[in-house]
Length: 324
Image (tube, rainbow, N blue to C red; front, side, top):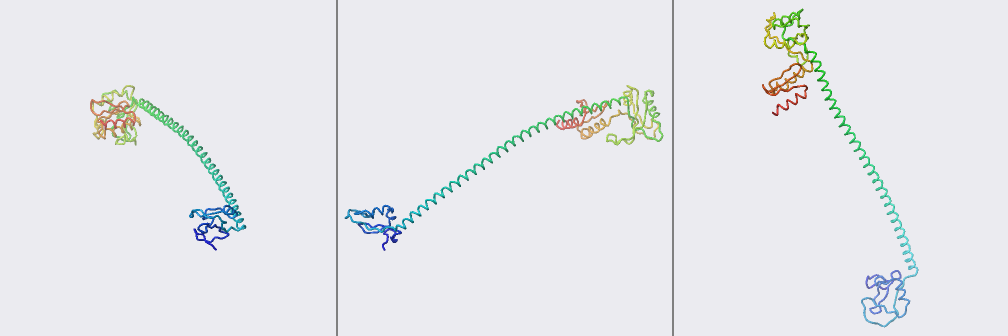
């Protein structure tokens, strides 16, 4: 048995080879880069002089010595090559089909998500339009509510003004000691004579029950409400300013001051109390008074006079006086 000079492996029918005519060394056909068909041609051809790549020069031509592969083995090789070719073709077809399936699946998936994205974008656009419409509606409702609040405030002021106008001919006498079975009309006539006023202008007089409102919570005694003839209330207010009346002046045991004031509606009374609490007590202004149902405020004597019609006016004046 001979061995390949290059790989040192045996040369036989399964691994055929060829001998160099010059150095007489054996080489596998694969090691010599000779195909099986070329080896067959060299073997069947007479006077072929084959030299390995390491040998040079001319030599006498003679028949080369070869060890040829077995025909069956050669058929097996061809069959194996054929089977390998078929297998490779099948694998290639499978890979191509798999790639095609994957590509189709990816395209379908991408198309699905693309459609979903378009659907979501459309929904977002619809939601934005609906949200904008709702925001506009809310803005309209807020504006309507503001207008309604303003109208309601104006209506409340008008109603309060009408109620206050009904009290234009009514006065309240405070500080009169309450007695059991008292004659309020006689008490009022006595005060009227003390103020040098005409008792005939007194239409009626009654004791007003103590109020639980904040405006009258400080009153220790209930007041006497007096109804006068039209246009006579100012005479009482002017006369009370020029003359002080004490309890002893009308036959009372206590010598407390008796004073006459203008009757106020519950809303005006509360607003006057609120104005005093927020402005006068907090030393933001010195003068807070009410005349004919109108609440007026003045920071200092001879300064600008402000009119208070609502709690918003109180808040506005409070902020203004704090910054001034």
